[in-house]
Length: 72
Image 1 (tube, rainbow, N blue to C red):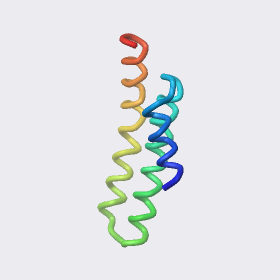
Image 2: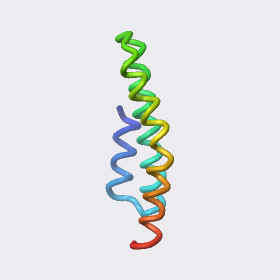
Image 3: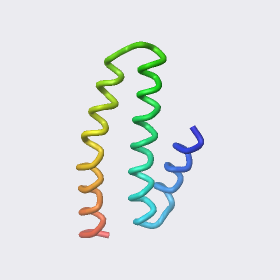
């Protein structure tokens, strides 16, 4: 959990470029945690959730970048 805590702190207080990187890092750490949970509990539904998060992470990050560029 320390990497996730670091990402949340940077996303909360950092500069816009640090927030962008922290958002990506938090998404990566979340996917890793969900994948480990899926293998530990032997539930395929958690793996589906992790894969969905991976597929939506990049478009969400790009939308965040457009928002930061236009309005901040």
